Length: 348
Image: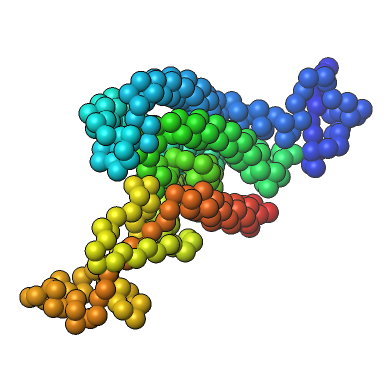
């Protein structure tokens, strides 16, 4: 007659069926077995993420090499469609050809990194816990040696590590590509919605946030499809809200132009506001005299002496990116803590 070994109530001691307390070699521990299970359950999505990282790296490397060769051959580094730089005279046709050739590929890469956090939230974060709760398979695990908090930690830790590694790699490779093709020559500037969302720590932070949103929504809603819809809506809302907040994350600079000066900023400066300034230094909105019949008389009556432009220079790019990413990661931490509190309250 044979006996079957079972773990005790706390998962560490032997039971009557295992009087010696010995574990057969090669048998996984409770938590290690759960991590293995998480990897098995999501191996398809993990594989797709890793394949996207590898494929994206190769594609960006090839695109960077070809774009750099074109720029060098046509001497258009730092040149734009309308450039005030003397060495860029006569390069407009080459710049147009460059944008037509490499612009679509660059925009595709930017759009992919913008959408990546949403896809992670939809297909990894949302079903990660909701599917278990909906099917009831979590009950089997929670009746074994793994407690609810350790179960949640094991379920989220491995996906978070994979997401962190993949998004960091993709963001770094894209930044390497953007060093060659970004700004003037491609007309793709750091402050655009696509570029800002694809560069530096921003896609990494939003991807981790999407995972946290999906996990918390799954714990609360316990329905996979409903959780996916809520995760999608929440991520779109958060991205739009933070985009509106972005210009105010740090003070912008202001440049004043006299009455005989051309009011023009560098192409890589992000214009966030403009208007008129008076002799006393007051700033008036650009629309102050729109309804006036005689605009010149209206401006003289307000004692206007020139125009001003509020802007973020290119040097503000990385501070803005890190500030926004810090806000997103702080929100991610809050949602993660809430998820563990919900898990403790519902399952002890």
